[in-house]
Image (cartoon, rainbow, N blue to C red; front, side, top):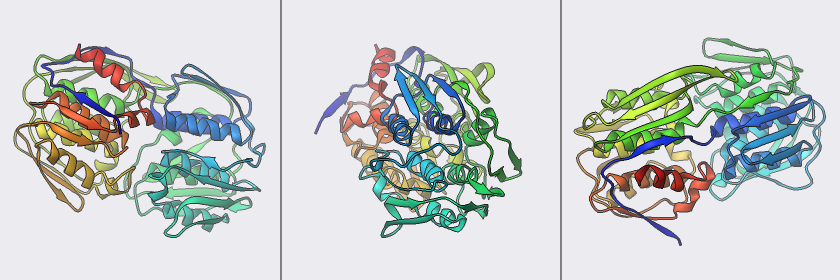
Length: 428
């Protein structure tokens, strides 16, 4: 088992060009596979998760070429996919499994899709049931778990009321809807990230939205495009928190996606009295993008982080916000976030235990946690193979009194392959 020691630092400073957005990279590759013509994706995230999706597109018949962070894909068109010769393995990516399952549900062949041990524990019933209602035949492991065996084709449209606000469920059904007869509608209890809708429109697919309902007409064919993927705000969040915790810090990050369905982390950090400025705001491939300047102003304050309109917009950033709370003054409550329990790990239970191990006053709740801010002592912690926990605990180490020895640090390659190099760059 590998370990890495993260020593305390007095401040961080510098400029960062962060890796491409993971969510957008997945979706761009999948739509490029379905498109007529060639799609060229610049600043594609070449982390394990997205490379597994690119490999799946290749397995399904698309011509895929990756050079550095540029991905070129010659699409198969709407009816050009082929039966895979092997099991499609998405590795650690639940996004890859759920989105590709929507595509596979529309194909007149049988396929098997799965992931690693963590993905095989993640709930898939939330996509299996509506896809079966559309006409796909799907079998799974007991409890609706991977591997999924899918026999697709001859889908009919669905008007689906989702019990959870989940961009993965919504995207799965919209992709399946491209292969269905009629118009497929998905209604959520609150807004989830809308990268799929934006990219579908950018690829020429007419997507309609009315309130919390999104719909697509079957038979629409995407057209190949050139895309530059914004930097990932989820990756930026680790450095935003670090700069907001450490006196004397100043940091600038370029070309960061600021889609409002993802900017809950900015709103919460500002409520906690962090100083974050957005400038050079523009639109890139249908996505809003800005440069972010972060400067330490004063010690952050505790906050209430809850609500069905907020939590889906920062679900991936809650672990690093818990670290921010540990270094802040006062109490922070994270609530209505039970979805954290069905991520790569149970991010409530594991995060609480690991923060306790490094001296944070924190209490687990069924749907979140309560954190008494003040200090982070340091000590030994374990990421449990969860990339977001690894990076959150690393940032905790920077602000700790004694440093943090982190077990299993290399899982960051799932979403942020050069995290450790960039962390070293701004802490020199």
